[in-house]
Image 1 (cartoon, rainbow, N blue to C red):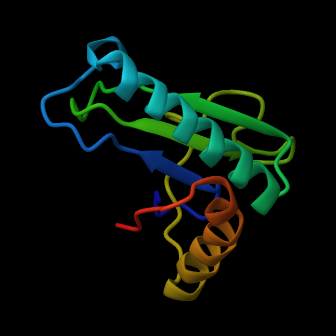
Image 2 (cartoon, rainbow, N blue to C red; image 1 turned 60 degrees about the horizontal axis):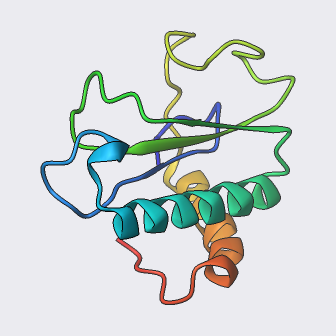
Amino acid sequence: MMNDRRFPWFILIPRIGGITEIYQLEADDRQQLMDESCALAEALMVAFDGHKMNVAALGNMVPQLHIHHVVRQPDDSAWPAPIWGVGAPEAMEPELIEQRMAQLLYHLEVKIPNLVKV
């Protein structure tokens, strides 16, 4: 989870070292990534009553493959532009972090059996 109260923003990271791009994954791993990404996106949209889901694999700053999942609302501070480069991150209090994690896990555990919590 990104520590930015402005957006429910979570990152999916395949546990395969040295991969920087989705196409570098083996077909089975790529399918698993897509399945997990879709499950995460759906759980986030339900948990945070999203209007639009932004999914991106930029990798310009951190080369390890990682997929951003950001719940968007028409009244968020960056709408309708992309979130990158708009304003400064606003840190969350520990209670809000715990609340967001609990909201997501509640909906995600239904979508992904054998969920590994890291």
